[in-house]
Image 1 (cartoon, rainbow, N blue to C red):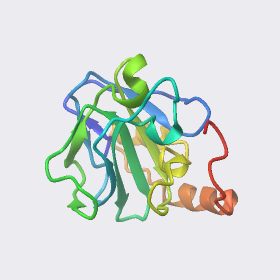
Image 2 (image 1 turned 120 degrees about the horizontal axis):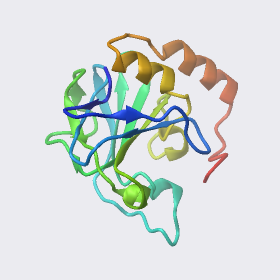
Image 3 (image 1 turned 60 degrees about the vertical axis):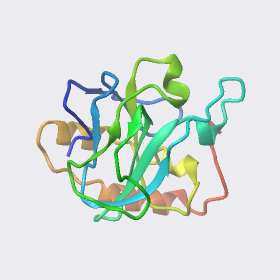
Image 4 (image 1 turned 180 degrees about the vertical axis):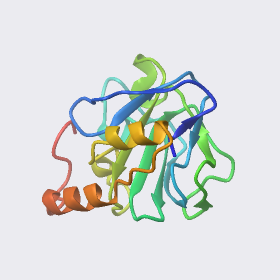
Length: 171
């Protein structure tokens, strides 16, 4: 399911430096679970500082889930985290995870949901969590009511990525 609801939203067809999409929408639109799954990581404090621009802090408020399909879905720059959203909680497709916003490095951009797709990793592996697979074809499908699955693309990309020895780009 398309991860932004309740208002008009337009997904970027490219992204700078690593595979992800910025879904431009007004502050306060719903960020919803694109699939049934469980909450993986939640960041409730915006620690981003433009002077340091640390990678782990760029997302501001964020939520990631691991879907029943084994894929991790990540949304950041939220203005709020949904009530009861915490690691380990089960969620259903369409359930509100938070609200779109301008936290983290989005303080200096138009409001949007940064959306990433990846494989599950150990906690705090932000360079994978932020996006490792280009999500545009999936977002385009979901936005038009389609069901295109990222499972095989995520598996293929994970195999090609190889051993994870830390952040490789835009760190």
